[in-house]
Amino acid sequence: MTHKGEIFSDVFAQKDNFVTRIEARVKMGFTAIALVINLLSPTIYASVGIAAFCFALLLAVKAPPRLLLLRMAMPLVMAAVVLVTQVFFYGVTPLFAIPVWGWRLAGYEEGLARGVLIMGRVIAGVALILFLSMSTPVSKLLLAAKWFRVPQTFIGLALLVYRYIFVLIEEAAAIKDAQKVRLGYRDWHQSMRSLGVLGGSLFFRAYDRADRVFEAMLARGYSGGMAVRCQVRWGGRDFAAAFGLGAMLAVFYLMGQLRW
Amino acid sequence: MKIKSLALVLAFALGFLLSPTPAYAMHIAEGILPAKWAAAWYLVAAPFMVTGMLVIKRRTRQRKGLLPLFGLAGAAVFLISVFPIPVPISGTTSHPVGTPLAAMLVGPAISTVLGAIALLIQALFLAHGGLTTWGANILSMAVAGSFVGFGVFVLLRRFDAPIAAAAFTAGILGDWATYAVTSFELASALHGTGSLWGMFGAIALAFAPTQLPLGILEGIFTASVTMVVFQRRPELLVHAVPRTMKAGVNAVKEVG
Image (tube, rainbow over all chains, first blue to last red; front, side, top):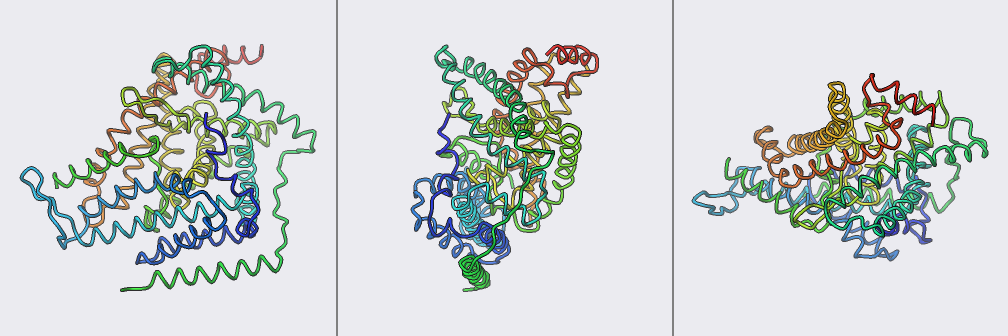
């Protein structure tokens, strides 16, 4: 089982730096509006600006470039494939033709432009998500979501899910180690059998632990609803951050309207 | 058209075979869907999410202890969705969708919400999926995976199919339903001026080399977990056992 620090980028959000100190609601609002600008801009310049801004901030607070590249890998593969589909399926102005087994496979100018635009949107979109998740702890994100009127049941459940992922990771790692000692995972058949037992055991542990968690919650005054409230008041620094990020949104919007 | 489809199939297949990370079920990445399609898939997924939330609210009001249980089940669903399943011969690993299995344990409406939470965490912390594509991914993985998996399992058990066979089929069809819905979502957004169904066929064909075997692996995994659960704690499968067996299950529950 992978170490939890390698799985979640939330560990970087726990550090203290000028990006993590920006209030969660400001970052969440900025991310949401920038994602919309990213999708609605007719040219790639907004995406370029958003990606450059987010990566510059993340690198400035010493986010590991290797981790950023790793997180970009899967979306980029999908974006590259979409680029290929657009080049060959979209447009009317032939750009090039590749002879394949007597056929001529034509790529189109409009398709290339659209594919590059989508690729830019993917890079900028993932950069925005990384900016948000690597600078804001989950608890603060969900409290900010409550302020944005996300239903309390969803937030309470998401908090519990996130909290117990780490508990179950440790239990799964212990079970897996025990299985390995007993010659589990030695070949494919054995691996599937061991994974089945691991998956089942994980559910048993989850169900058994739920009773103890409920008793602990009752002892702390749980009466059916979780007290999820965003009580942080904005200070001068939060207003300044909101103004600065708002100005950047205006810049991204204007960049998206540029036509060269 | 044929040669274009061939090129597309090769591009997708090569892209996923050469992918630097293990094969996940098909998550649509952030930024791929145009704004109007992203919004449309949010609207389609919304009623399922609302229903799931109402079911959770009603059941937790009846029995308060269910909220931590759902939270822990959600954490288990998330972890199962990142389990590295070994792919025979190739030596690589892939990951199951996990929602067909979750639906059998907690019911499809609740499994939809748990799947949505798992997708949100994956999007935020693994960059698998996205925020504007969350609606589309909920529809394909949480909704289609849960309802198809659950429906197939219940139907087959009603015809007295062996539990392992029912779970295996539910896992496969739940996974393939996810794959079909994602292909349609991608095709609808990317077909441009071309044929929607032509693009759907090309994308479905292109993903087939990775997704068809992944579905079979999901089926094997779902069946093996279900068998473990059924042998040791049958009361956890109360949502998906036929009526004829519920008496026995309830008896086990009471003894437990």
